[in-house]
Length: 417
Image 1 (spheres, rainbow, N blue to C red):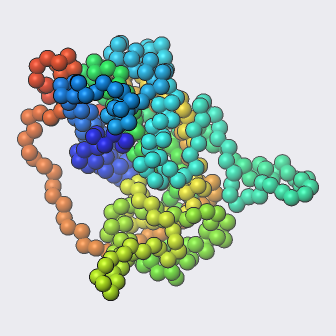
Image 2 (image 1 turned 120 degrees about the horizontal axis):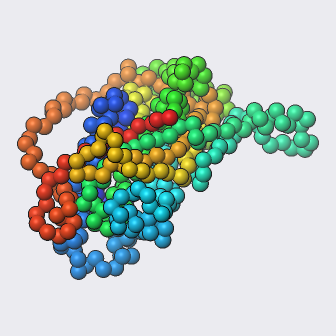
Image 3 (image 1 turned 60 degrees about the vertical axis):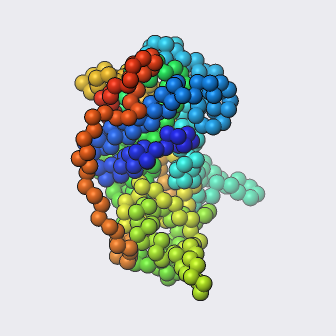
């Protein structure tokens, strides 16, 4: 999240819960997690908007300075026109302008900056719904001298296509009605930030563990043996320690498969990293100074909440192809999930992902690896909450009385066909 003022502890905690629910939770748990994240984001932006209107009016006169500080998001002409019209009509429905493709490009760029996994896979953004062509890293597609007579068959085997229409990500976005009256700047900040966080959670979860049914095929999945479109998990390799002999077998397998064609990454859940990897990688010297060493194989450690705990994924991340369409639909949702005092919209964008080769990634099971003892966590809070500080209502947007507590809940994003 580029705007650090929005990245409160409440938002951080809600983001982690959202990632965990996408990985392990059922539909109800995912919905509750998205509700909590939406509330935390609304609180954060609402407080920032109120401070801007009431306490910083004299200072905030130069938009370029504010954009550089991260308080305001810079907008293109088309983006400003789109959000200005939305603010005027109090809706994203029936606008003359469609959601600019630069919004999706910006959201993906922000996601890649803050999510190492998504920044390191081979992500391609296309402007329309079309097929993405990628090369199998283990196949020869260039030749010295005379072109072989069977070149057509060779190229058909070496290049593969990925249809972006085969999976569609649909996410519900609840916008407090007062937000439209805050104007295009804060409206754009809310929409982009909400899309950024929800897309990051769902995209990263799909890249790692997507089933292939109306969604990407994840790194931990086999590329064969699907049942009703759902691909099974890869068999795991038991890894009891991080010694060279233990890691060498996985590297040898990648080399044998010809998929060790770049910097190999070890992708692990942050929980598993701190409880099992960190204790083995932190070493002390004679002067009682501590140093963090690398894996003996030199792998880049990438942390992602999308990875199941007690699992490490090994492979070259560029050997995963992720295609995303720049086209996004943003429409009003007025069916049974309508929420009081909220404008509920459904955002849809198209994308697909798959490993470029069936042996591009190997999955290790580290459940038998010794680890740190983790203290028990507290249960759910039962503190009474008469209202949420920072809620934005029409009263606040109109600079009238003290803010009232809105009832703000957003339904979760899910992949649908």
